[in-house]
Image (tube, rainbow, N blue to C red; front, side, top):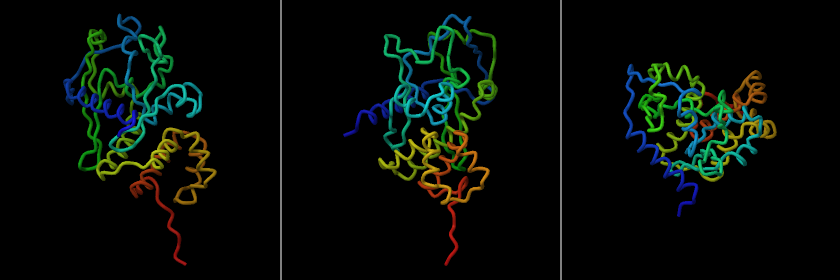
Amino acid sequence: MKDLNDALAETEADATDAFLNSLPELKPGESFRFACHPEVPCFNACCSDLTLMLTPYDMLRLRRALSISSTDFLTHFALRITIPDSGFPMPRLKMREERLKRCPFVSPEGCKVYPNRPGACRTYPLGRASRMGEDGKVVEQFFVVREPHCQGFEEAASWDAASWLADQDLAAYNRNNDRYMMLMSLARGKGARLTAKQEQMVWLALYQPDDFQKFIAKMDLFRLVEIDEERKARILADEEAALDFGLDWLELVFFGIEEGLRRKRHPMP
C-alpha cells in the first residue's frame, strides 16, 4: 500500500502531465504577449493555492533569500514528497494555512523573494516540459498557460520562448533542474526505485547542501575521487558548487557515470 506522500506525488505528476498536454504548444519562433507588474489588475492572483514542487536548485535559492538552513526550510516551508516511480524526493512548498492558501512569500507589493523565486514561477506563463532525447540531450517543449483570471496577456510586450527564458534568468535553474531530471530518467530507464537509504542520500546531497558540506569534510569523500584542490575549496565554501558536486556524486554512485567526477584508481600493489 502506498504511503500518503507517494499517493500525493503520483496524483500531482499525473495531473501535471494531463494539464500540460491540454495546453497549446508554443512552437519555435511563435510568440505570445505577456507582462506582469503591480498595475495589471490581477497582480498576485496567481500566487495562491499552488501545487509548487521544489527542485534542489529552487530550494537552494529560496534559502539564500531567507538566510536559513536546509533543515529549517524543510521544517517550516516544505512538505516532504517522494516521486513514486523512482523514489526520488521532491518537496512541495507549503501554502499558508488560510482560506486563500497564499504562497508564504507573497505580499501586497509582490513576491518577497523575487530575485530567488523558483523556476516554475520564473517560467510562468509558460509551462516547460523536458525529457532526455535518444542522443542524451535535453528536449524541451513549451506550452502557454492561459488562466481565466490572468490579464497579463493583454499587455503589449511580446516574447518567444527563448527571449522569455533569457529575460527571466532561467539558465542556471534549467541547467540544474535538467540534471536532476536526468537522474530520475536514468532510474526509470533501469526500472529501479531508490531504496530508503539512497533516498536519504539524495536529500542530503541535493536538498541539504549545507549539511552535505559538513558530511563531505567529516567522511573525507574527496579521498574517493579524482578532484583538484581548487574544486575542493569551492565545494566546501559555496553551496552551488556543493550541489554540482552532489549531482556528480550521485551520477557516479548510482549509475557509474564519470562525466563530472571520476572514481580514484588505486595503483596495483
